[in-house]
Image (cartoon, rainbow, N blue to C red; front, side):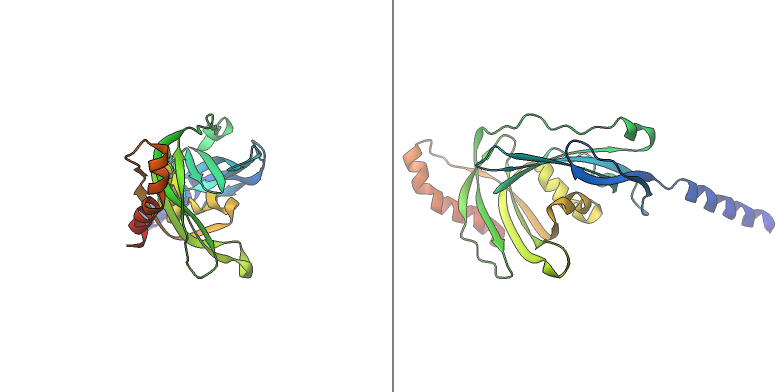
Length: 229
């Protein structure tokens, strides 16, 4: 009877010894330094995220780096681009063990060329949802319209929020993994996501600038109906 008990004890020791440890930190710039932290159950990867935030109509860019524990389901969902009033680009790299010492996350050159696709653009702060959407031209690899509902801020001062914007498929995938650990990446935005939906961005059939401008209001309502149906 003693042998099975000893085996169970050894198994418990081995399981405890295999707990993943990751460096946890967040700070401005292209790197950050933190302390090694034991990951929670189910978190089987370390992550390194490079986050770039820039004003849509400005040239000022802010870079922030995050490191921590995550589930492997979040890995491979990069680059994630959310093109709202503040454009956000996220490069995410996962690693384990010694590979984390040389891991790096890099963002490619920003592609600002319109791709002929459009999404409604709307940001709502407050509990009453009222979206008077305009139309936003998607750029580069942005071929999805992302609708997110949740809250912004932390503690008792948080506020209900919702937004719709152009996004890349990787951005939709990253939001889709919010319950599996990607919420740690969104902490830098103080964004807690409760509901989300992605739909394929649509293109205007006419190439005439004047005709396109006339179609934009109806076009915005068409895409918005995709989310509100």
